[in-house]
Length: 151
Image 1 (cartoon, rainbow, N blue to C red):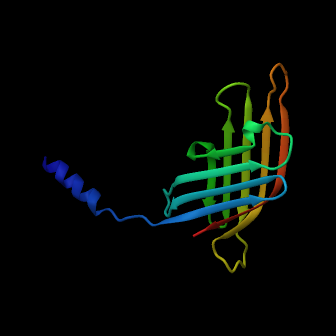
Image 2 (tube, rainbow, N blue to C red):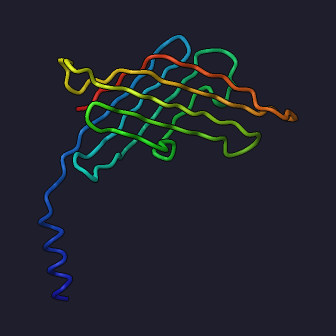
Image 3 (cartoon, helix red, strand yellow):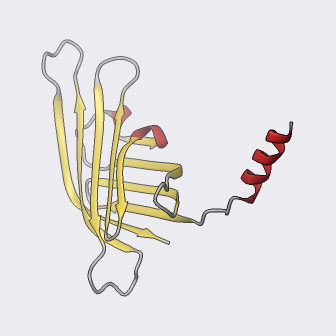
């Protein structure tokens, strides 16, 4: 009982961590993408409340992979330290034929950026679909510019 009270007091006295928001966007002739993430500051900081929306504007890719609303499960890797911000998202069909969407965003803040939280860089997106009865998947690859902001 006493140990529980001491432990509760220690937890209650822990300082609250500061949070910020992170937004990334792609908008070109082939792809529209929006990401919104809440992150904590500090060494063991993590991401929370991740929301991603991806729309393929270019023709060709399967209809069910053209518009995706994704959550934290799709974020398989990230790097947000200093002047670098990188996101790696992956989505795979859960039913039916095999199909995947993989998006990598790599951005940096510039050495003389007026907006301290602005990041710019590139994206690489690959969509893969294995049609019924086919032995090889059909793949579409898109590349272009991406921007992010952190505050």
